[in-house]
Length: 196
Length: 179
Image (cartoon, one colour):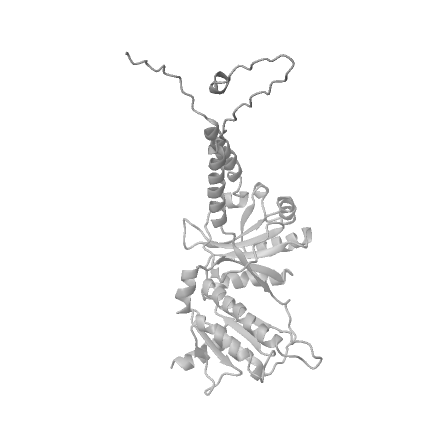
């Protein structure tokens, strides 16, 4: 095979009593075939590229309270009501709705700013209760979108509150008060009153 | 002077890379062939999940009970509940606790249920393993009523914490939504 090296060697001369220095064999450069390594590397690369796109679904955690029949009294001024109707429109009002305080329509992407603003009002800071009333005919995707906006609003609210200190000198902890309720006929009347 | 003809030598192709790739593909396919779970294989539906903002919380794989609210692929008017458990050992015990589940369903990972059976299954699941986590995996096209009912059933059967399964909202959707 690699016969060149051997054939070119000059035969060593023997001298009596003297150790002849052996002529050093010339090293031949060697090569490693990198093809398998590259193959495998590419294959692993493509494999990981494909597997990382296999998105695992994410989750949105919900906690529902046990059934309670005891009535809890809250201040109307600390109530923010959101209503998602059957035609997937979102309305909101604060406190108690009447002729002067009508439910107003709001596009879902703008909800976040509204919730942040309302939650940080000095009067109701950290006490505001958000009630989401959902029509049974509303679209589930819209419900998730609203919940998502509310969840996203929590981040700036918590951050703003943590900058303040309570009477003990500790940062204020955000206490989220949120509940889901069904949309009643009366709520619908409130909305329709606004439409007319 | 006549040209000396070069002697032709037999050639050798190194088959190592080919064999490497073949083995690798083989093992790869062998592994991927198992990825689909039994419950997925039995599915008569594809769930189009609602999208939410990107989140790092992922669906747990162990001891998870999934309530699917799905629209049948073949019949778009047919929405129903499906109940599945990822823990197959628990699943059999749960099935045995619910008399409404016929024996021929015992090897199935997913059963189509109505609201009464759903409640019984949830209760049985919690009695078999109280640490089981619940998830509602609903199609984004369904009416909220379906989800509300499922939530009420869970509440009645003392499953107070659960998860909504969502997909990550993509950047382009985010832009469109923000306008």
